[in-house]
Amino acid sequence: MRAAAVLRSTVPRAACRTGDATAVVSRGMATEKQILGRIVATKNISKITKSMKMVSASKLRGDQERLAAARPFSKWTETIAAAPVLMENLDAATLPKHTLILPITSDRGLCGGINSTITRGMKRLDLAMQAQGKDLSLLIVGEKGRAQLGRALASSCDRACTEVEIPYTFATASALAAEILKTPDADAVLLVYQRFRSAIAYETSCKLLINLTKLEQEPMVEYEFEPDTKSEVLQDMYEFTLASSLYHALMENATSEQSSRMNAMENASKNAGEMIESLTLLYNRARQSRITTELIEIISGAAALETK
Image 1: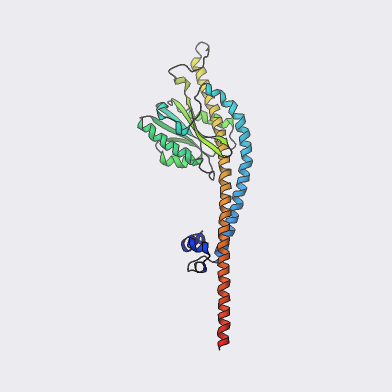
Image 2: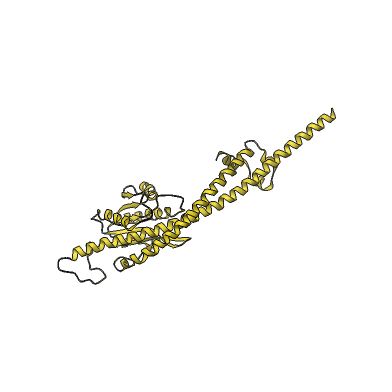
């Protein structure tokens, strides 16, 4: 890294393009050994990024299969809960006064901007809800979300769930649903996650789940209840709806994470290749300048001997 810093600070861009020998031998310039070490290090990094891309591509296929199985499993919840909407289209005025928000992020990095887009959206939503006098509490899933939102929205961060077992299972979603139910004063739960669109695209989406036991009006679906069982049935339905929607959101976010990591590693490998080419060119110029200088010294010494 020190050699790279020297390269950036001492070699003018124009000199590198024109092959000016004075730039190669200027004081403070990296030596051939330093440049060669940088080339070797960049090649090793490129090998790692290429391997990570292959691993992510393999995991992506498995996540896509689990997502395909989870989507029909959660489709029925849209008859009770609202359909997912884009984060940028979410209106804070439509949210209840007491809302528990569950942003789903990853535990590991090197996956592009999949986590930062969620945290930026959460900051905007927090400001909008504060302006309307509404309460916001967070149950964060993922270490990256906890690290970023724990600083920006420290007053709203109640709990965090990190180091979740991968791949996600319905048991994991059920455990998260049980943790959400420990907040009985929440009028609704807002799931924030990345919805998978394709291997190169995903969308930051939100899904609002209203607490059925606190509805002032009847649900939009007609039901027939046994006597004195209405509240119990609505509570059970809310719990199962919450677990099903959570499982689907976890699958969507996991698939988006692998696709984003695969693309990030592909871009990193491409950038490493370009850096290797530029460093190799710089190394060849430095080597050529050294050889030319040595030849000039040898010829000058021979000429001096002849004059004597």
